[in-house]
Length: 606
Image 1 (tube, rainbow, N blue to C red):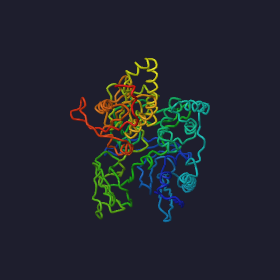
Image 2: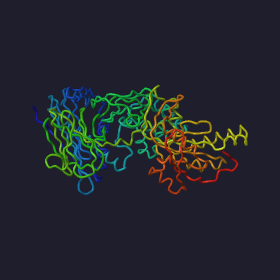
Image 3: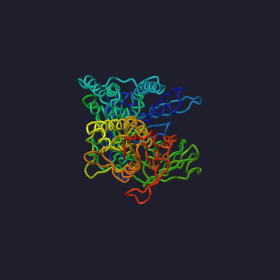
Image 4: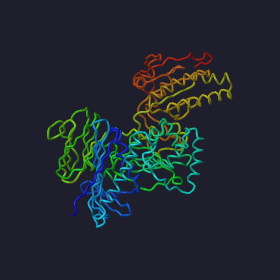
């Protein structure tokens, strides 16, 4: 059998490794920039619980078939992958990437290609093909580093994508339509430019929060813009049911009502449940009439495909390996790439536990035990499963870029543009925390008597419009109106309190007196009267607290008033603590009354 050959290239850059890793380890983008076609993997569960992954594709004129081994990487320092080919010029072909400090604030980047010929073509031209690949990679590395420095707007120079006839004309009309929308936020040209010229790897699951950072706008503006783009026909949206292990979208639906209660992840070989608050994400993609995307990905298992995984190593049966890695303090989980037991770690710094893999999962080895667990800066891995297995150390915090159901349904844009979005009959979504604001006009009966029905109705309608604008400005949504009252929801209690204070400041100019109550807690999202609504004791408490308002003040539950972010908002507001017995609650309820910033109009009576 011909020996394994290796060719290495290295570069030195003036940026530290932490700034280069996100762009250099993004193998999905890199492969697209290299001109490689997207591919899909056929994933077959094995009797021992692992998954056999086979791929098919074409590259450089060759038809390829291969088994794809799990990537190996150490966050910020190293990654490599081994593909074992059954068709093509090579038996093995894969990159080895290393990133290290140069000791002067910069980085040394090393990129190696390892290959083993399979055919005569591979033996005769293997080195030449490797040289061509290395030269192409080097060009892309330089482009990516320039992007990391801020010298380029995009990571790579790419050929223009093939677009359908009329795509530019359609997109131009859609940009105008987006900008006409009250939720377009002037992003029509930005969104159409992204769709027409962006990388396919970024567009397959377009994340508004990430887009917001890229174009320099607030997250809400980008989310609203994407929703407006769906209505204009530029984008489609999907509710993705993310795997709780790899966090990849393994099942998607165009409507909440079509999303099942669980799914199977063939990559992790596990069944998992739906959690609207955690693993259901709203993402977007180009409409096919403007930018069709090919199925598959350009790299399906690289480090940035699962950025929450800090370390992933593939160990042979009986292998023991000690690697240099110094993980920062945080919440981690130890697991394998096959179903089995896991271990959660609260890491406070210093030595990190080692990992022992068995056929039933993973066990933690004592931290700081020489030759057994880990010392500061190193971690020990041991495979006692009896078969090849990948070990993982992953960050347990959820991605900040995920746009979850509670966030979406607390946005006014979503409720206005997609009012028909509901859950299926009998379905419900649990939310661990939502801040609810209830308002009501004090003395509205006297208002109608004093002004007459027509004039008073116009005043009340204008007050609804004012409150709705304030709610939107504070990242909330009006859930419904009930008579003269408004119910609004917010993801952040501090936003709800800021909105309430703004309402009292603004409503005083209209010679009206407003009663306000704010509470936060768990709730259940249900479909009521063909719209998404909240149900439960948190709703009841918020409504009862509004009833304690005297007009011109704001009544906060203790849960809201004690929130650290809220305390900063109300630090300079006059307040007093009170307690009252409320209908439907067994014990007296304590609350905080924010003193009226203005004196209520004497013309109105309760």
